[in-house]
Image (cartoon, rainbow, N blue to C red):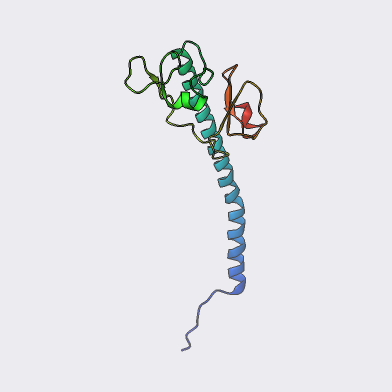
Length: 149
């Protein structure tokens, strides 16, 4: 009796490769879209958290916005302890408020946390975030589309 060797033919291997190529062409874009949606969700969550902390600062500091007084810039005001008049303080001191943020979070689209602080509109893309010292508006500044959030 002859023993017959069983093996795949070149045509069978090519058919499998084509099927795998078609499946990957369908699946990979779905992962890319999910990644963009996750970044957008992270951006919206960061904005909501920062805006809430800005409002808390404003309530505790006699309706003053962080970084608008002569004592501290925006980032320092949000990440340090302070007195109701905006003067720097330490944890545990009487009437010490703060540490509203451990640090300014990264914008998930730029992976940076730079904040442009101004009363004038900045050029889009010059920083990760923008804080308006007159209106108290805090928004993303990485693209025109994200500035709408």
